[in-house]
Image (cartoon, rainbow, N blue to C red; front, side, top):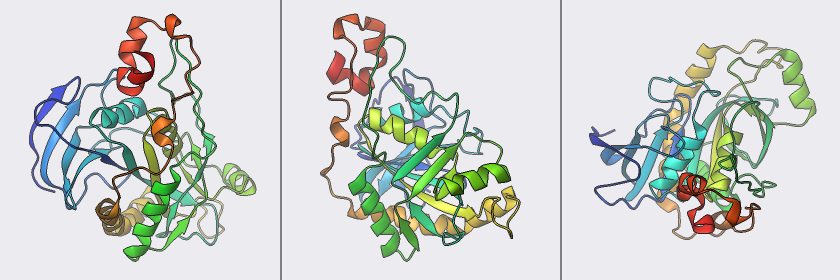
Length: 303
């Protein structure tokens, strides 16, 4: 990755005008995006605090893209400690309309072996205690989440994986556990009985917030292990996960570059109007402070 220019810190993007429409969130093992050029680091101060790291804005396949390391460079934040709201809000403030996410996962099926990819279309939420909404403290919104990922964007991402020679499985259920410890054998077998396909620790929280922020969200799950249910893989080790993540780094970067290169400008989905009928609080009952805090997310609906 090209050396980043001097960073800037602001409540909203300032200085050089960026036409960032696409954001990439990198997970375990993907802390930078190969191929980014003309880069600069942007530190965005959001109403929800600081993102996991500076956001690297650069040119990828001829398009301006924002890259954020979910866990921070050096992997400083556990899944429970990530400020998901700040991450999604910061990308929205930079102008992003679509998020391509990368996540390391364990497989819950024999036919989903390590080193394969999956583009899930469903989530099962087993997290607890996380803040997974922008709407609290005096304002309530209920967005539709029956289909938690953007269908057209997910299809596009899966096609990009296929084009670059990656074995990818289209659709499936990603169970999102709290972590940071891996599953017990009992938990792993339970998730299999519930017909979940892969298990990770981050995807569902991002997807919920992206929907509230009216951003398209798709994730590619990089299968690193068989979790602990498999008779020949009865203990998940970090070394195994990192080794397999390293093997797939080039593959996922190739797929992301292809996805960015071929992504059309228009959004043929309803993600961009997810809040249109979701806010149920009487506008007169929303405080000025709350309106200010939510301006980057829902300003057009509550100002």
